[in-house]
Length: 454
Ligand SMILES: Cc1cc2nc3c(=O)[nH]c(=O)nc-3n(C[C@H](O)[C@H](O)[C@H](O)COP(=O)(O)OP(=O)(O)OC[C@H]3O[C@@H](n4cnc5c(N)ncnc54)[C@H](O)[C@@H]3O)c2cc1C
Image 1 (cartoon, rainbow, N blue to C red):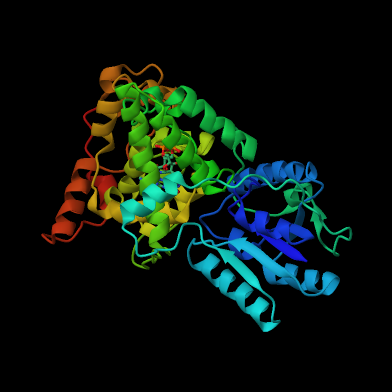
Image 2 (tube, helix red, strand yellow; image 1 turned 60 degrees about the vertical axis):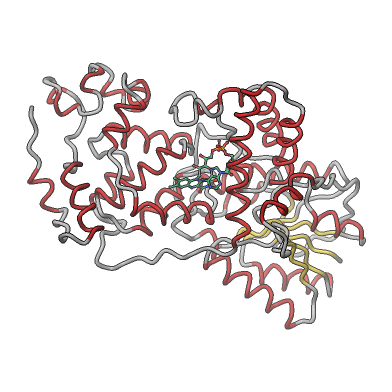
C-alpha cells in the first residue's frame, strides 16, 4: 500500500510522489487537516477555504482516474495509526515542506513515527538539491526540465478506515479562525492553469509598466501566487511555459515583460532552494495583537487613507501588489513600532498566497525600509481612485486632500477617523533609532503630539 500525503501540493499534474506511488499498485491519496498546523496565528479561514476548493477539484481529478481522495481531521500521526491498523505496513510518499517551526516539528514527528515502525517515508525535495553546479546552470536546467504528466489510473483501496472521509465536504466542520473571503481567487488546479494561460496569452503585455499600479496590476500581474503557494500548479510548469513563450516571442517589448516576470520566478526559486525559514521572535516589550494600535492597523482604521484602503482591499480580496505589502509592513513595524512577528502573522492571515519562506524573508527586510504612505499615495494614487473604491466615506474629498484628509476643510463632516500617528515624526524617530542617535519616543504620546491644521 502506498499513501500519498498532500500538503501544499494540491494537484495531480507534475506531482512526483503521486506519479511514483501510482506505479507500485494501490494508492491512498490523503489530506489531513491538522490542528497543530492550522491553529497558527498566520493561518486563517480564507486559506482553509482555498484548500477546500483545491481538494474538491483534486477529488474529482482522482475520481476521473478511478481513484478518490481520503481526508482526515486530526494530527498526521493519528491518521497514520488508523491506516496502519486498517491496512498494515505501507510506504508514505510526500513532497518536502519547509514552512517554519510548526511544520518542522510536525515533519519530525511523522518521520519518527514511520521509522519507529520500520516503514519507508519517501520525501521528495521541492527543488533540485544543491548539486554543486553553479546557480545559473541549475536554473537553466530547471527551466528546461519537463513537468510530469498526470497519472492515467489511480487504484485506491475499497475500505475506508474509521474516522476518514471521502472528498472535502466534511472538512467544512474543521475550525480555523478568521473570516473566509468573498471576492478572492478560487482554489483548484484548473483555475491555476487558466490563470497561467490568460497571463501568457495577453495579460502579461504591461506586466512591468503596471507592476505597482494598484488597479491595473490586478490584471497585468500574473496572479499565480495563491496557486503556487498551495501547489495547485507546479512551479516547474509555470517556469517552463514562460521559457517557451519567451523563446517564441519576437517582439522585444513583450520579451522584456516576460523576462521581468521570469526574474521574479527565479527570485522565488532561489529563496525556496536556500532552505528553511528564519523564525521571527516576539519581543515582550513591543506592542502585541491586543494593542489598540495593532487593531486599528489590522482593521484599516488608522486614519491614513493609503494604509486603510490597502488593508481593506486585503481583507476583501486577499491580494495586493508587493509594493503595498511592503508599505503596510513598514508602517506597522517602523511607524507604529509594533512587534514584527505579530505584524507578520497579521498580514500572513490576510494574504491568500501566504508562503512562509517568501513572506518572512520580505518581513525581515522591513526594519531597514522606513516608508511614508502619504508620499506613496501621492505618487501612485494621486486622484484617490483606489482609496475611494475601498473607503466610500472619502468619496467626496477632492484629490488635493485625498491622501491627507485631515487637511480638508470639511474633515469633521466625514465619517473618517483622525490619523493615529504623526507619520513624519514617528518615521524620523524610527530612522534615528536605527542609526542609534536617540531612543524612540513612546508611541502613546504620539496621539497627543498630533497637531492638525483643520
Ligand atoms: C511584506 C511582503 C510579504 C510578502 N508575502 C508573500 C507571500 O506570503 N507569498 C507570496 O507568494 N509572495 C509574497 N510577497 C511577494 C509578492 O508580493 C507576491 O509574490 C506577489 O505580489 C504575488 O502576485 P503575483 O503572483 O501576481 O506576482 P508576479 O509578479 O506575477 O510574480 C510571479 C510569482 O513570483 C513569485 N514572487 C514574486 N515576487 C517575489 C519575491 N519578492 N520573492 C520571491 N518570490 C516572488 C511569486 O510566487 C509570484 O506568484 C510578499 C512581499 C512583501 C513585500
